[in-house]
Image 1: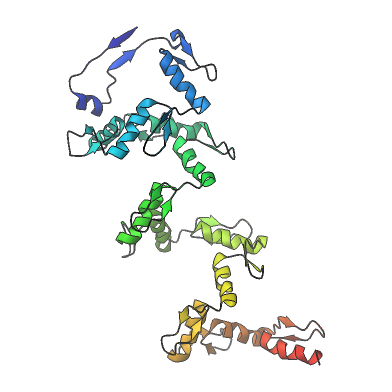
Image 2: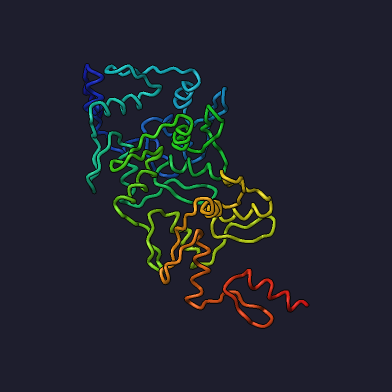
Length: 364
């Protein structure tokens, strides 16, 4: 038996999250039950629509873009994407929406209302669906499974994004340069390249960023936080990507291979620099003498010749050098290190340039 509880003000109903229809019908009295998951329904049409969740059937197809839906109501809502129709208008501001649920969410943002609270932690939500998805973090439930790789997720939207890895679908295209993305958030971030927008500003210095994640990483410069620690040597890093690169020192992994000579590298940047040996590209050009270099650090060291700067100082004898490599070679005088050994007579040298002419003596 159901009891109708009416209210005259639709907007008040939305703000207060009133449920105008309350029902004490026992779930066991519902006559139409799904034979797959035992979920029960009062109407047979609702059961038929539900069964499409299991079968994957999508009988309602859009005539404009061929996208298909399991429910006719979803198709009607989707068609508004093409028509531009927005029948649900906010009575507080001028914003209009294509879905009633979007209007309800919008009104709760204006009111600050969060009627759905988590019973485990203090999190609150404006939508019941958000609460249900959040509760899976506590329960560990992962009801949405990828049919390609069997990876499971706690939200359907995350599964949808994941499946684009397999399908290669990139539905969000930039209107300026046509670059396409699998996520809308990635498109939004990309568009800031064209607009120059940097909405995330550092509160300590004047630096601003187009991505929130970049700001968080930058702030670690000021607070000294190093959250990513190597489990082999305990060296810590500001960024996870730097930790991953560092761990290849221990593992010996070289995932970036040259397509010309098959030489492997632990860093992608090193592979790019190496490719210039084969291509002859020298993108770093000295502004004084126009000499070109394949590496940026080589250009910087070269520029010290023009400036006379010697920023690298030996901590033993205080001799200064314009290049870091020159300092490293010099320090071998003090340490006695001779890392370049002849394969024929085992004689060793401080510099590779000394080993090469020596080896020619054995060749006759």
